[in-house]
Image (cartoon, rainbow, N blue to C red; front, side, top):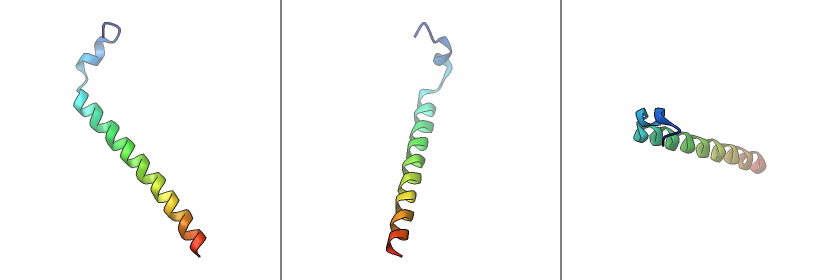
Length: 43
């Protein structure tokens, strides 16, 4: 922690929340692409 003194000022809960939102949006994006591919195959 001595190498990154600026990290002490960061709100870890906010950082984790942003990370979870980013991961969730990434998963949602992948699922939407898979759904589009399946719809194209069904047509």
